[in-house]
Length: 420
Image (cartoon, rainbow, N blue to C red; front, side, top):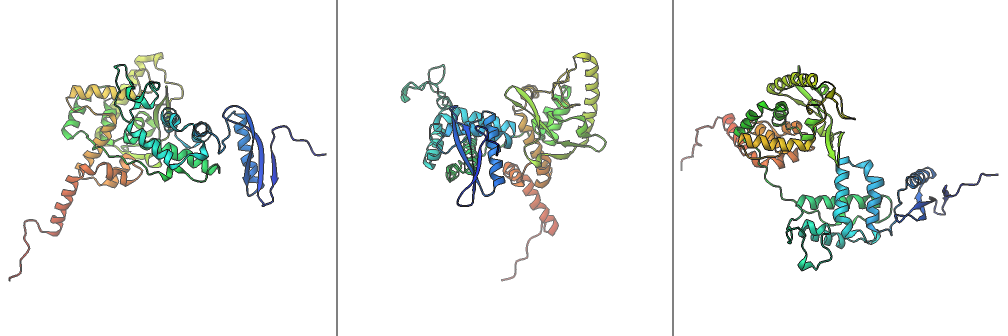
C-alpha cells in the first residue's frame, strides 16, 4: 500500500494538455495560508518549482500571486529573489527606495492591475514633489498648507534625476521577476520611457591643484592612499580593501579584487560590481616609494599599539590602509579627511570620487588614449569613459590634429592655388 502524503507535502499531477502541475500550501503576505499551483513541461521542472516554493514556505516567506497588492509583491521580491541577484549595497538602496517612495504611492495597487499610466503618473509626481512630502510628512494637512520642516515651510528639495532613474529601475526589476513567475503578461515599467539624466560637468582638480593637495598631504599618515587615489583613479572602497598580497612592489603593480562598503551599520567586504573592475593597475614610481614607506610606518604603528592592534572580525589579513589600531577605515571617514586637506591646501573642496576624475583628466592631458584610461579606471565600457570625460578631451583632440599636420609635413605650408 502506498504511503500517505503528509499534510502540506504537495502533489504533482499530469494535465490533459500534457503539462505537469504541482500544488502546495503557501503563506500569503497577511500570514494566512492558501493553495498555490505551479506548472512545467516536465515532471522534473515542476518538482524543482515545488521544492523552491516549499522551502520559501518553511522560511516563512510569502508566496506571490497575481492578485496580491504590489506593495506585498515588492516585500516578497526583496526578501526572496533580489538578495540572490543583487550586490548588498544595491539591495540596500532598492529596499530604501521601495520603503520611502514606491510602496507609499503604488503599494495598494493590485499587481495584475498595475498599468503604464500608473507608473508614468507616479514618476511624474515623484520628480516634481519635495522629498519630505514624499516620505509622508504632515500628510494630514491640506496640500496647500503642508509643511515639511521644523522651520514651518516646505524644504523644496526635489529628487535628483538619477534618483528617479533608480526608482524606475526598481520597478522594472521587480515586475520582470513577476513575468518570469508567470504572474503578469507584460512589464508595464518597461513600456514607460526611462527618465533622462543631464550629466553634470565633472570639476576635477587641475595639475596645480593636485600638486598642492599632495604636497599638503605629505605629512598625513595616509599620504600613500591620497597619492594612489590621484595617480591610479581607484574607487574609495577599492583602495580601502587593498591588502599587501594585492601589491607587487618589485613589479610596480597592484591587483584590484575586492572593495569595502558601509551597509547600514556594518562595513562589508565584497567583490567589485563588474568584471571590468577586477583589474591589474601599473603603479608610478612615486606610488611604489610611498607604499614602501607606508609599510615601514605601519609596522612601527603595530609595535607601538601592541595588544591594542586588533583587526575587525571578518577583515582580510594584511590591509594596507587601517586605523592606528589595525581596523578597517570607514569609507565615510575619507571624505572628512579630504575636506580638511582641501582646506589646508587652499584648493576647491572635492569629494574622494572627484580624485578619480582628476586622475582621468591628468592622463588625458598627457595624451593617454581613452582605452588605456578605461582599463585603468575599471569602467565597464569605453562609452562610459568617453561620455564622462568628453569635456576635458579638447586638448587631446587638438594635439591629435597637430600631429596629423606633422605626419603629413604640412606645417607652415600653403596649398598651391592653380593659376586662373
